[in-house]
Amino acid sequence: MSSKSVALRCLIVVLTLILVFTVISQGFVAHGDQTADSWPMFSHDPQRTGRTESPAVDVSQLLWKYKTDGHVTSSPAVVDGTVYFGSWDKYIYSLDAKSGSLNWKYKTGDSVISSPAVVDGTVYIGSWDSYVYALDAKNGSLIWKYKTGDAVNSSPAVVDGKIYVGSLDFEMYCLDIGTGEVLWRFKTEGSVYSSPAVVDGKVYFGSLDNYLYALDAEDGSLLWKYKTEDTIVYAPGVVDGTVYVGSLDNYTYALDAKSGSLNWKYKTNGWIHASPALADGKVFIGSDDSYLYSLDAKNGSLIWRYKAGDSIAASQAYATGVIYTGSDDFYVYALDAKTGEFLSRFKTEDTVCSSPAVVDGKVYVGSDDFYLYAFGKEETPLSLSYELYAGVITVAIGIAGAAAYYYWHKLSIYRFN
Image 1: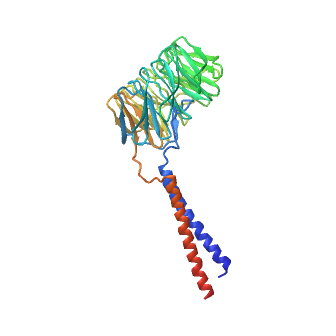
Image 2: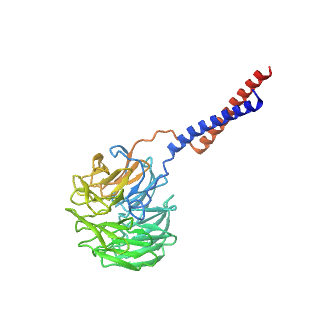
Image 3: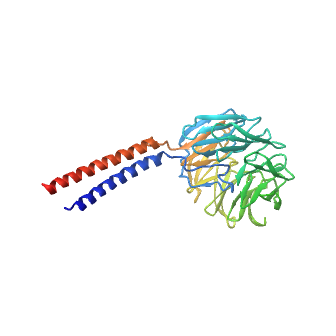
């Protein structure tokens, strides 16, 4: 056997062993990294699609629950392994997503029903004390606050260095994310409970004056408005050039995002005071008539409907073929998004108006029973820290080198003796 052949075989052994140990160790590290996914604001994104690619979750499996001193109707945001939400006890909370342990809480002057938007290390959220707050996501310290003319129920959308949020003072605000300085404001004829959707340089939101508005995101000028037969309380969702929104007139509307013209509308037997989830060419939306509806996004035709035990006031969340929602019957539901088939549920101790956030195979949602809940499978403790991973690779290289030397030495003895 030539010296070149021996060297080549030794090299193959070294590389093979390094590859094996690297794959195994990377597998451990990947298993322990549960922060790749996120749910940074109400309905997941500024478009308010309510959609993510997180693995499906069995919501009958409770991981933990955290008790506040008030109703939790605020919908949680989950970013970098941390859950953020508000409570009627006037606090904004930050919890560890794995354990539910408290990181920090910040006291406002009134109930916090608004849902947080967490962007670039800052938590943006409104309170019924009329303020919009910007807090440091790590420690909860105040960065700035801006006072509107009335309570802030709306959940902020953060896009391109600006915050868009409504107030019960009839106005939609655009604020600078760094300073809280007001850039523009637009006045409607009714309170703005609705959270805005911000897409392609446009801001879409509803008002208690029965209109859905489309504004220019840069200067707040009116592009169009569409009148329904009753108030619009929740956020619209925007996908593929269409705005989908529910109204207390019992209808779900699909409007052309550019012109505001009506594409279709679908009538239920109850108020629509939830935001839809938009996925796979479908509109998933709950109604006060106790049904969760799946509609064809193109024409509004009914695909399926599922009856809960009471009104569905929570907005929906979609993840990998599963739709999640809460109900006034105290349950959190998981349904097959294609068929509407029941998959799992969990009963809390009061109504569930908070909307689920789905992140890394976990569901987080609040209840009027004062708790924030986390559902999903327990993680197996197989994760490795970066330092331990580096150590494993170093040991692997050492073992591979020793094995290669032994193999080369044995062959050398065989050749030369």
